Image (cartoon, rainbow, N blue to C red; front, top):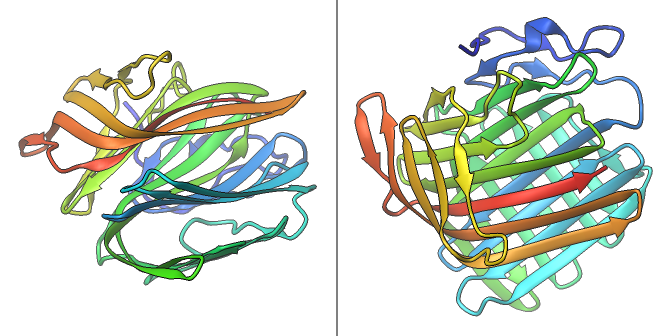
Length: 321
């Protein structure tokens, strides 16, 4: 049984180790990521935005020795990708907020400028690079809940994550001289703060439709007693404490994926694969992020829910960092 935390808490002890009182899950961001030390600290904000015509990804991250930032746009009609990435030594020009949902996170360097502003009313996203500009407002509906989880590998290696799924989004996307309105869209936030092992593999899936969001994780939480699995029904988190089974074909990432477990009978049907790789010898990563439609059903407090109309992504990421 995972413990639900209902009061503000520091993620770390004064010596930089994991605070035992921080281990559990939340419905609102309650953890202060008071990380100390250098070299194993990983901090990031990732926003994924799905519109009827485009999929947008925006990331600001500090890995201590580097800032890794990026803007990604997929045209859902043509399949054309716009990718603008930047690696900034020692994460110079990177500012990371200490709490989710409060303050400013920003990055500047390598031709990429990103600013993420947060307060109690919602989020404002501004991102620019050569040939692309994104300006989005993501309001926080009254009573909206997000899933926060602390995953403890040990008292020195741990991760705090907030997955905020199914937020409405509006604004504009500019590609070259063409301006596209962002409407009838939803946004997903992945807020991460922690001290990671050198090598790690994870799965992540998120998707939304009006009134329903799904959030599933795999591999990286096994054996920790924590999971990042939940459904969000009408803005309320319903936690899933069990690990889920992920089945997919790494020789054909666009074939259907299966995600199953207690109360979860899900098939994911991709329509596009995004591949992101890096290899700097000691530091390397490979991510296969597939965008697509979810089918099947999940069990909510009030009974089984059909997933028809849920759109999002599922991914496998392997990192040495």
